[in-house]
Length: 486
Image (cartoon, rainbow, N blue to C red; front, top):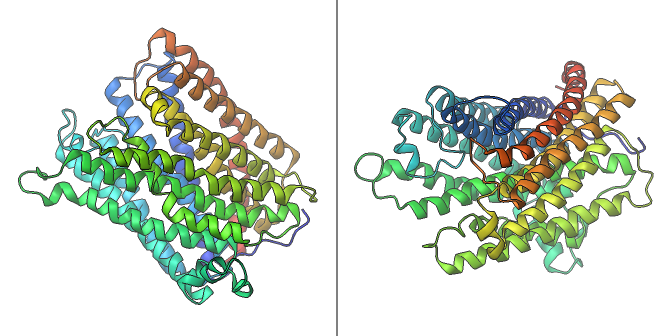
């Protein structure tokens, strides 16, 4: 490695970041096992009653999003902590509230038998035949606590980046941006700090929509809110849930900005295009949510057009700034191949191909054919597993290696590639299944569909072997890494 050591705050923020990363990593591993279970059931290799399948599907979907987000929050906090005055106390408070919400979701699905899917679309949670109102209340309560934990985190990040920059406008590099790069270049926020400000603003807005969705059923008249319009509920849910999920990859990009320079020997600077792109994300990340409502014929047509435009436009900042920026940083550099740089390479690949799948699904004509197939899980699993999670895992591995003083091994590098190949094959079968009209959310697959799931399950085994090896390496270094930072 030929760059300066990574900066990590030693005032308690480092330990908070490690705590988030570890908890999120464990949740990801457990939710991954549930995902493998579902593929084995769909392959016809493992019997599981449909009611149990849908409970597992609900927990897997909500838990995987929550787990990767928690890990991204931790990695980003550790990276930002050296640049801005984060509070360890508030970080731990947000983490505890967040995890309590996750616990309620587990109780709602496993004990309460809730099986609505992660979207818990109103009024389905309150009309289930196999679960009671208590399970619905627990699920909504769990989501509410996760939202509150994320809100506390976003407020903490926003306050920290604003204080460090001398105001929110400077934290967003507006003077530099609106002067065409002529003024304000002497006090620009780093890419790490800038992306956090953007995520915090959108996160606060998403939580506000989440509050409207989660509280709406309880504020109407009659039992569980008879006044709430289901289509309105679905709109605000998607603004909350879809935005929450997409912000994960922007927090993960923050860890990428912190990690990649260590393996190229080059600084990732805040340029005018980067400042413009990240400021555009504040608006653009909210627009693609409507491509999940193309199937709703009563939806206003104007919102459907917003969904298609947003689905295309949101990819431009990611490609032009982060993807091409990362490739430019690597080009003709003294690039070092190591576990983190391998995972970053996989992450860039995953973000590109997952994004391409999302753009296709965001096209109205294609969406009408593909949206209720496995094409949809294909695109978001790709940018989550081989995008956001790979970036965060790269940061986590790099951090524990540095703090523990225990170098990686050649076997670990090999296992990083095994993880990537296994994940790519598993995800490819999702895309192939979707292209062949295999429906999503089906517990029972007919024989004609089972072949795709069987091939996918084999790749999952390879992915799991690589991931398990990396996980063991991280956990072996975790205790000395924890002791190294207070």
